[in-house]
Image (tube, rainbow, N blue to C red; front, side, top):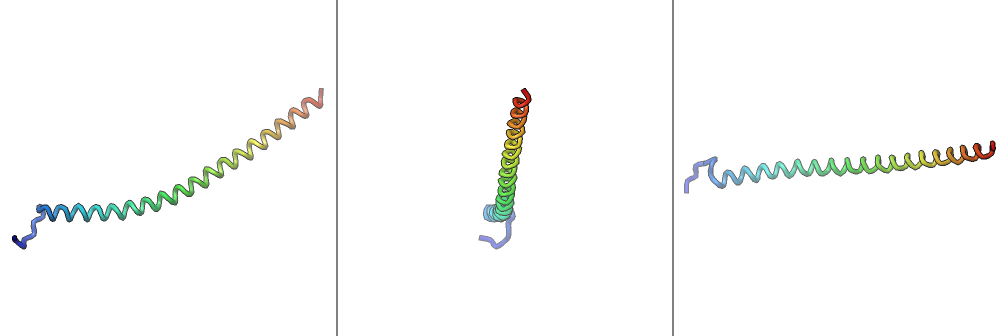
Length: 75
């Protein structure tokens, strides 16, 4: 066996593949962390949206009830 470096050897190619996979693992972990943060923010916004819709529905129902009461009291 020769001690010369051969960049096209199987061991060399596998070493490069493993090195790239390790780099991708780090990038994937960073992406996972960011996705977790983003999902938390989206969940908060979704809850806020439904809260606001509930308030609007309540106000609308109150106005409609008041309108009907005024309408029937004028008859």
